[in-house]
Image (tube, rainbow, N blue to C red; front, side, top):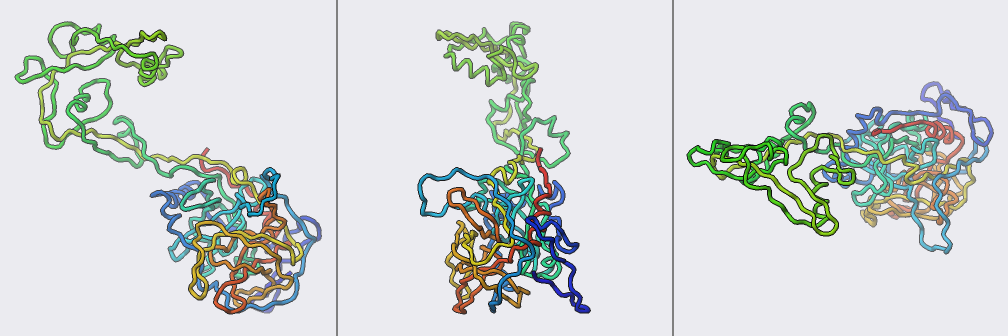
Length: 517
């Protein structure tokens, strides 16, 4: 197990050895570091709004995280690895049914996806990551440098989200806002890439839009104190006359023109039109000529049974129970339901006398308030499952790695788009990899010719192609050109030991909660 020397006095950082045992439960004071990403629901909803507005434009505009400071120019192979406890493992969740046939193609796990964040340079980036088993099914495993900005400072990045199954701006399993990041103390304080891993708790998935317009009537609009707006819609004279209906709640207006005006029948130039009312209003009205008096006899419309039924439903009536669907609902017309084909709708009209205004310029004012359209999409582990976790495993074992590469090789070649996940398969090296520029003394390595964007993705030990599950035994940390031909050929991971398990267990026992009830 590696120890970091303090700069002053040559003292050893007191990380301590873990007590031997399957779980490695003894935790030293300076092992686990954690930091808030989105501490409150309000902060988390702002993150959702940022990434989802304009049809997920920010998600589509992000690029693979590939800062110059993380380029690996020199590597050295060393000895083996020093285990600090016995090997151990935590089983995955969400196992799928086994396939009867032997499948040659690799079945991609539902748990993998992209980690999106905003760097301190103001640019939008992604890394790779995976859902991993935890007590509350709310945990993501990724690289430490995909949480802490190791380029400009040691602070956590902003607007961190995980999108499993991400594809071309779409989030098929929802968007999960990071709440709290757990890393090793040595990575947070000393940027020691032998501890370049992070476990991030996330809120439940959020679906929908953080801001959604809702059309309301004027009374509700004027009382609302939040964000709101008015939309003007051009309408015809006939539709605009509805404003004279006392039951109509829409508001009509015009721009510098003369509206229709309700007047008496003897007004010069006045004209009469009919206005549909309820049966009760019709029979209360007097006969003869005048504003609001009966307009002829009731009009009976022959309709089919289904047409009559749809009319009732459209007017807010519950035909099954023969009562209003809403309390005190009233609507024009009476309906006779007859399955033998003799259904009718009777319409009642009163007189509407108006003085004609100018034809042009009629508009209807539609009132909108802006509310949250977010809905809870459930826990991450319930939606996509979670990979298991393993530590202190022997080197030289087969693993399958996954991620979303996009960046260029050192020679400028750019073979990957970052649109779809890629994978590599093979044995990890028996010898530890040393990279002095990143304080690396005992990372594991693996031959895999990918590029930036793949970092943070899981190294899955004992991966079942049928179940699409395995054990996270590493996360891609650095991408190196070991044969110096200007093409990346090797990826690395910190060795997951007992101290990694301490960090993982602290994160796996942390509750994050829901953003939307």
